[in-house]
Length: 252
Image (tube, rainbow, N blue to C red; front, side, top):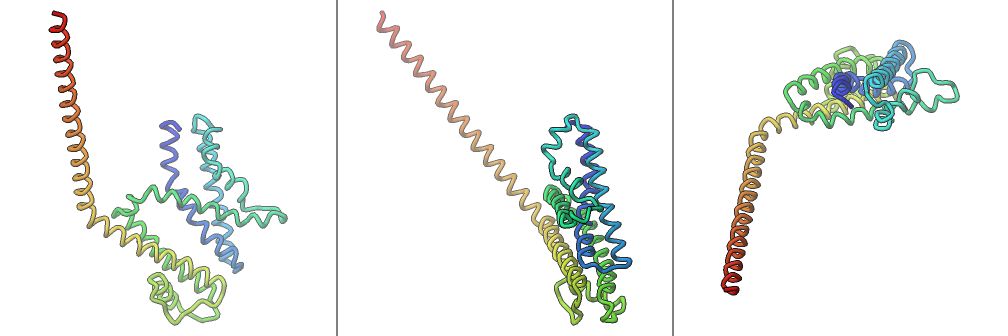
């Protein structure tokens, strides 16, 4: 890719990661078949995420200098657009599972590890955690209407699930179990992010010092090798001079 297409890809990176992340709640709600408002939300999220991948594909094909080369290096983008549309014929409904391929885009988060462990990354993660608490509580209440829980009971359940403390409130429906798993994964990820961020903040100076020492040792080793090589070269030159002198004496 050239400089222009690279800039466009960088700008699309964050919204595409968000679109990929929305795939998980979309599939969870759809497969639980809750009906009503939740099903409408799942349909809307499915259209939003698929449209985001479609827009990215069209935009990138419009800006890259070599479309065939770009498609060879990004076959997954093409598969997602053509095999995971929100509207599928009845005979192809089994292909709905292919929507999970959108989650593979989240693998690119590994390239953002330093940004994630920064203070700004922690802020975004904290915002995601808060949204998970509120959204998870609302979804859990919608699925678990038979338990007659109020809003604060749902919030309490969500927080205790995210922190793995547990409570006397347990899901009794498939939808509630799916929400429980998603909330638990977000909670574990947030705690791991906080741990990694604190570790990086406190250990970063020591790691930088160790890296500097290793670089200095490497430089000193290279300098020593160069000095030894220079010494050997001088000895070889002196030996050549001595041989030439001996040869001249032999001639005389």
